[in-house]
Image 1 (tube, rainbow, N blue to C red):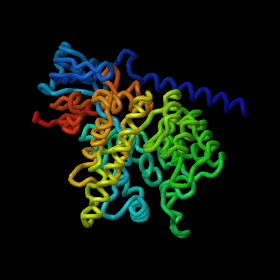
Image 2: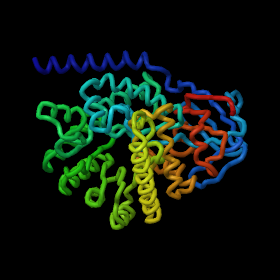
Image 3: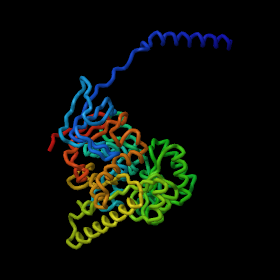
Image 4: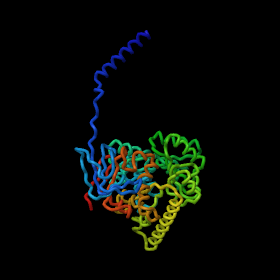
Length: 447
């Protein structure tokens, strides 16, 4: 009986195969190639060499770049888009975003805003907020972001997937899911009843096995990278916990971004071998030396002094305003010195805004680009700032073969400005043309 069933199964399988073959397309049939679009510009920036190429042409087919250079012949039948004398360069990368957060300065600081956000907004509602803020980033010329937590329970993954599928227009997202942290995450002191809110934003770990399990859960949930909070006030993860987080993430080919502030926390992060240290508002020279040796990126989440007080001093007394402005100026100046030390030490820099407050009169993308002013104030050359937001960011995100430069086979992510960001970096704040993966997002007339 078993032999008869086996024989019958083989016969039915063979018949099914013949039916499929009879309906298969001819072997020589090919899918029609996507049409070619030629973007002409007066100036084309090669971010690797720093050379500005006159009479630039970028040939795009589908989602990718076919070729980029000077006076390239334009294929017959190509759609030609002439941007005049604009400077074209790769789409920008923000390596530290929080698209599912939009705090309001008038409500107070981080603690008050975080509790209110988590307690009153579902992950679905925050994902919709992220779609709106992501569109603002994209229209400002930021075509790729690394979103580092504070997105509810995997809201960043949902938004990433919706953008990838074309259901929502937004930047390419490298998502981290919930950040790993010590007890309490980045919340202030909560009542026992309110401590359940922590799990909506963070995965609390205590011990190496919990740390390993948290990484595996994040990757199962769809994380492209791992975000770890090394310290929040006196709460600090141990070196052993950090090392197992890095080990488990790297074993599965994922990078680790470490929020670390202060000598001890930054040293622990560097010793553990993370891929990037975020913020590092204070960091000693020996840690910078270690970062250079281990090729660890610094993501300086810096802004000009006026950003820190924008929208936050509406009801302040003259004395309060004076103190706040002085504090902001001191903070910005300290950050500037830290960044200058890092650059001098040879630490690689990737641009990251860490923007999560509503800036008065500005979109999320517009406010995020203010970070370039802070980098310039620290003495970074404009070309180095552009590289921090293109090729360096691409390498940190594990996408150096896909984004960050306009080269054959890479994603057709490009922006255009009328000014000269190599002379004045603020020219990047006035992007008039944006293309992501061959799709035109924004196309304004020359100003």
